[in-house]
Image (cartoon, one colour):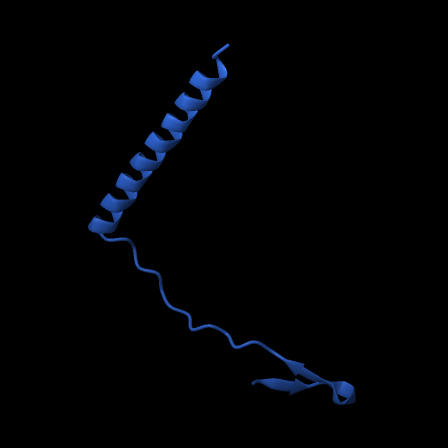
Length: 59
């Protein structure tokens, strides 16, 4: 553990810094998966909204 000593003999304990790396852009396959998941998510939300509105208008 990396400790530092301050004035008066106090110790400070610092967390380890994570390893830094350069992010890579998504591949074509990952981009296609993101688009597919977005479409599925929008369809799910749209379907839930349709059900909510159709149930709420029943009297």
